[in-house]
Amino acid sequence: MSDMIGSIIYTFSALFVILDPLLSVPIFTSMTKDQPASEINKQALIAVAVAGFLLYIFLFFNFFIFDILGITMPSFQVAGGILLFILGLQMALGLDIGRAKGPSQTVAGVVIGTPLLCGPGAITTVILLSEQYGILIPAIAITLSLIATWVILRFSSTIQLILGNTVTDIMARVLGMLVAAIAVKIISDGIFGFF
Image: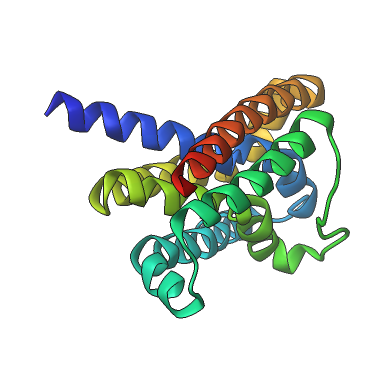
């Protein structure tokens, strides 16, 4: 039982770091500025629903997709690790690689849901966690991560006010370094998997 709890905590932590909802706080706040609380709540729910749908699709059907495309797990680990490393660099250095700019407020939830929350890094992490832990533990971790993400987005304006831009930026950069470190481990595991 303690092993399962430890695995859930690890998978939740890995997913939460990759999803990085705090990074979305200033973007979500600016996109939903001057909107009523009901609309902010709706957009937060849309963001979580979009991210959750994609994460669960890749959790349950990843190997079916692999079989169709003829992809092996080691090759996916290396490719996914490279994408994660780029994501980590992006977060740590404050770069904007392939991000949508200037979306309207009406699509805030969709833009936050993907690619900001559920991008290549999150999808890669879910697939790799399912390879290591099966379906149940990552499914629980995804649910917990989505609940935490919804709470953060729902109260994003308050969080932004409390933390300020500087603290939010520092946290995003530290999380970026952690993502890059996770990516290096995934790449090395993939390379060893070839042999």
